[in-house]
Amino acid sequence: MSGPILGHLVRRGVQAAQDHFTVADPAYVAKLQQDAELYEQHGQEINPMEFLPIVITAIIALAIIASIRYTVGEVMSSLAMIESPSSTAIIEPKASPYADDAPPAYSDAEKETLIPSEADADAMDVEVTVIAHKPVTSKITTTMGHLQRVGGFRARWRGLGLSILYHGLHGAVSNLLAGGMGFGIVGHFISYTAVSLGLARLHVVWTHSMIAYPSAKPFWRRIVPRKQCGPLLLPSLVFAVAQQATIGLPVMVAFALGLPELKHEHVMASAQHENCGKMVLLGLRFLAVPATAIFVALAVLLPASTTLTRIEATLLPEDEQTIVPFDKEAIVGDLDLTVRGSSKALFVQTWRSVDRSARLRVVKLYAKMVLAQFTIAVIALHFAFAELYLIGGERLAVFVQSGVAQVKLMAIDVQQQAQADAVGN
Image (tube, rainbow, N blue to C red; front, side, top):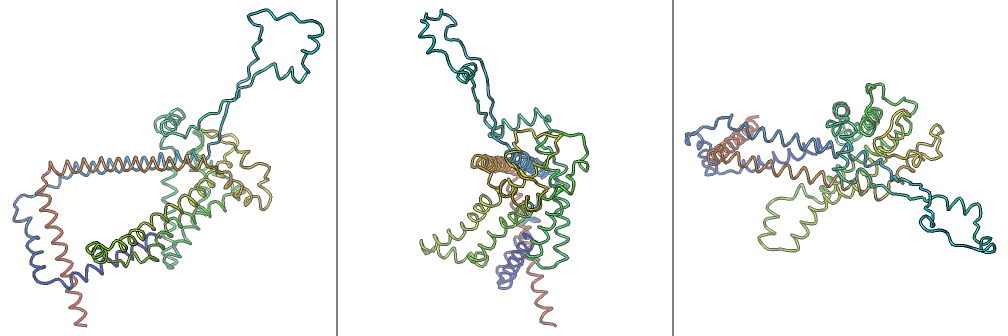
């Protein structure tokens, strides 16, 4: 869905630039010509190798951000979605109240009243202590330590190869189908949903590789048999639609509020005239887009993703086990998945099983992921600015100013040539 939207925005940007360059007066063109010659007049050339530290910094930052996205946003979140509350029951014999002192002397009549029944005697023999365990995925540090104990240092990227394979196939096939259909946004929506259903079995293998103990089987031998894939269709469909809705609905809200047609001059005019009412309305219109995206993500996409992951976990083979506690019986219950209509019942039952604590745990993980990525980006920007300063800020400013002026002059020439060709025809 982002392709047609991006194309629309680019076309509007090009049209706005063309309108601006069409009305450009000779003084503006002369100023651009002066700026374009600044770099040559400056006399100090910039060696492309001087930008190598900045490029290396950017590559390292992007690699770390992508690693955080996969480790926290995929592996840890999948584990948090399936983890069930666990507890340990400690059964100990009750200590005798007369361990240190001799028991008091009772008469025969008193002994008669003190003799417990058989059930009371059984209850008095042992003492049961139930200890509720804190979920492993409640903290990133505990989850990371658990992953490292299970699969070593590389366990934080478990399933990465299958992720690349799945997303590569999904993107290539869906874009190919969307281009063949030629229905724009609708065609992209249909192709994306259809490919998600077609690759559902591969998605299951990817999920199993993240949540289960390492297996020596190749991934093609871990693919779930087709006969067992009935419960996957509905949650995969809902998840694909939820993904598209998370992107599409905010864009629809933006177009409904007229944000793409909103001109910069209107905003500046409202600010200059100190029209508080208009500024508040403009602010609310802009905030409506991210608010819609956050609401759809929390209310629809998150439960849909959790439901799909839990249903995929129920399809894990009997000889494999999840690395975090997972109560399969609590989800499947008495359902017979071979009976027609059981897939819908399983979907509804799994959707309702997503309790508040599990949802909050996943939301916290995503919030921490965004905060970590933002921190890495800020640190990388500071390093880049420091490197730019060492390279020579003034030389770089002249280089950028001259390059921008040359691009604008080229755009003006292209526009004037197009107008001349249109008049000639």
